[in-house]
Amino acid sequence: MAAPSGASSSARLVLLSLLGFCVALSRQESSSSTDSCGAAKLAVASLVPFDTAGFRCAANWKQQDFVLRYKNTGPSEWSFVLSAPDKGSYVAVGFSGKGAMVGSSAVAGWASNGRGTVKQYYLGGKSPDEVAPNRGLLKLVRNKSAVVSRSGRLYLAFQLSTDYPQPYLIYAVGPDGNLPPSSTLQLPMHQSMASRAFNYTSGMSSSAGAGDGTFPAERKHGLLAMMGWGVLMPIGMITARYFRQLDPCWFYSHLAIQVSGYAIGIAAVVLGFRLNEDGLRNVGVHKALGIGILAMASLQTLSGSLGTCAWSGLGSAARPAWINSMLICLELRSDRFIWSC
Ligand code: HEM
Ligand SMILES: *[C@@H]1O[C@H](CO)[C@@H](O)[C@H](O)[C@H]1NC(C)=O
Ligand SMILES: *[C@@H]1O[C@H](CO)[C@@H](O)[C@H](O)[C@H]1NC(C)=O
Image (tube, rainbow, N blue to C red; front, side):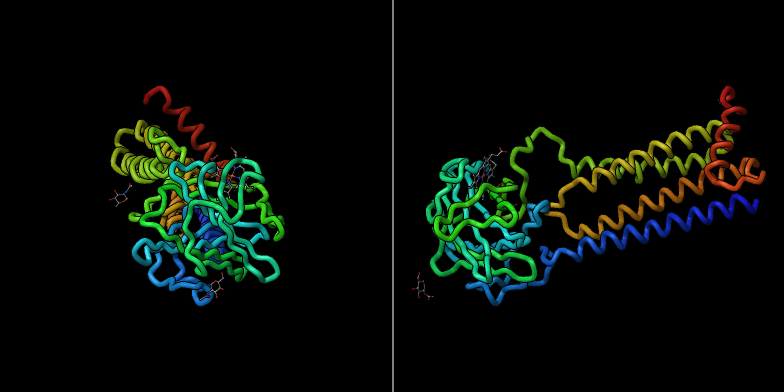
């Protein structure tokens, strides 16, 4: 009896330290970004040429860590502050009717040697010479735009004179360390871009192009997690707890349900990590919770298998490695019961 319990407690230890590690990792990840919609107020509020109190916030391009704050600050006046990592490149946000680049107008900003530049561009085509500086359909309010570089982030602030901005936001980031020359102001082509349908009233965005027919990845993740952790695993446990009189059938059903529940749960976690976190709140907490559930379930599955061996009286032989004991246990059980189930 001593061997299995020793093995299971060390397995527990390994899993618990894994859990701690994962939580620490997700904590670190969220604190390393210096701006987010969770921030109480704009870090550079005093340097922006308009009042930024009460702005709403959308982190709808997570891949590039873009944070857009905005507010309808007056009749026909919309104010924006885009915050993005400063990698020595330009950042741009544009407004588009259908989500396409061509035909839209964008505001681009960058900082070099402590001096910020903001310019409007008309995106007339997909080559650098068709993207014209100081032109475009946006009515920028004069003397109300600024670029500030602070703590490795670029803040691009501007105001538009419009009743309601166009329904698509388009974003772009220039190539690292390649700024537009001050003589021509010509933008180099973006290293990355994005297009989002955006509802300024609800604050909801969706990636353009993700067709309406496709099942959203968030829902898939949620559904899988619910099926795996919330439905199958508990059913598996109930089988083990209440249907033992149906020996050995309970064991096989329990095993099958638990293994598939665990696999589906893991699929949910994997899918969760691939989600972009647009519009989600408390992502760090959610992530830590998910990892916690995974660790707990792993622990449960492991100790459950060990428990099974001990219970069936096969665990008493000296078996140093828990994995060994598990394998032998399954083998013997199937040997004895496969035909009678
Ligand atoms: C010199 C400047 C620019 C050049 C040469 C350029 C070039 C291009 C090219 C070649 C594509 C097609 C890429 C592909 O399909 O993989 C594209 C797409 C795109 N660009 Fe640009 N671009 C420039 C500036 C901008 C700016 C400033 C923005 C936004 C603020 C922007 C937003 C987009 C978006 C959203 C797309 C994808 C949607 C679409 O194809 O219409 N671009 N660009
Ligand atoms: C607004 O900008 C113009 C130049 O574009 C400048 O001459 C003027 O002093 C500015 N006004 C204020 C109030 O800053
Ligand atoms: C934006 O969201 C608001 C509130 O949720 C809704 O009433 C409105 O119809 C939406 N607008 C568009 C264009 O979808």
